[in-house]
Amino acid sequence: MKLRTFLTSAVAAASLLAFSTPVALAQSHYKSEYRMSLVLGTAFPWGKGGELWANKVRERTNGRINIKLYPGVSLIQGDQTREFSALRQGVIDMAVGSTINWSPQVKQLNLFSLPFLMPDYAAIDALTQGEVGKSLFTTLDKAGVVPLAWGENGYREISNSKHPIKTPADLKGMKIRVVGSPLFLDTFTALGANPTQMSWSDAQPAMASGAVDGQENPLSIFTAAKLHSVSQKYLTLWGYIADPLIFVVNKEVWNSWTPADRDIVRQAAIEAGKEEIAIARKGVVEADKPLLKQIEGLGVTVTQLTPAEREAFVKATRPVYNKWKGQVGTDLVNMAEKAISARKQ
Image (tube, rainbow, N blue to C red; front, side):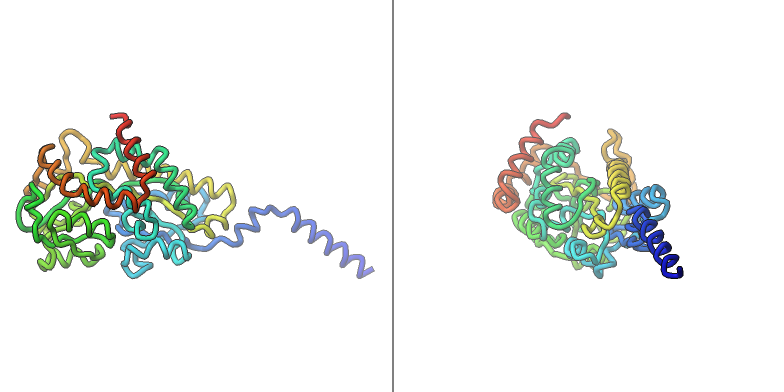
């Protein structure tokens, strides 16, 4: 009798387990916290994008997916060029990352750093929101991460402590801080500068001490990082490259979530990406450019290149563009050039 009771209980327990939802079982493998890597904190559009994403996900999953932000690429000791490898290895669960920082591991991402490829915001959108963007997402997926949405760091303008930059000759011998990408070294060497590779955490002290003369970054970073206070008194708007951001998740983490939660995370990334792009462009795309007025108000001399002046920089960097076209992938660059020339203005 006891045996029958035991068997009945065992069968009941087994059938209960069989009917318990796979969702509940899957969720038992969820981590209590997911680590999101960011180069910049929430004072910058970049970090704000990460925060928007994390908040939307936490809210819509009722806290099942709880994301903590780690700005300053603190999970990898501040070395932003190691972020992609760490993401693939699972040291990092998710990230809003820069195409520049990931380009040493995914050479196709150097596309956005080809000098003077993208003349305006419509050109960026033509790439990220079209076939080029899809192709790059396929490449990233094959490289071992799950790409979900595009964001934006912005057009990178050049500043320095010495004098206005109007011609390539003005850059001669100038020590310019650049990110850890060989393409940047080639570009600034072609312009006669002395490019110095260093992480962002080392860049500001180097500018303050005069160890480097200048840097290139979007205007939102110039203001939020108060670069005028580290001798960056001259700013030139040349729009030589822009830096799209990508919202991604580690593959194993992605596969550990239920399909419904994956949909939530993807949708939240797409929305956060759109909102982040709007924040990154604020003050820059409006006709009166309030961000520029703010920078000029800090005592910074702002130089806006004429089309002819800009063309001199385009010519000087063309050999670099041609050299790297093959390394990025000729077909991909051709597709990008075609999308840009067909863009809606």
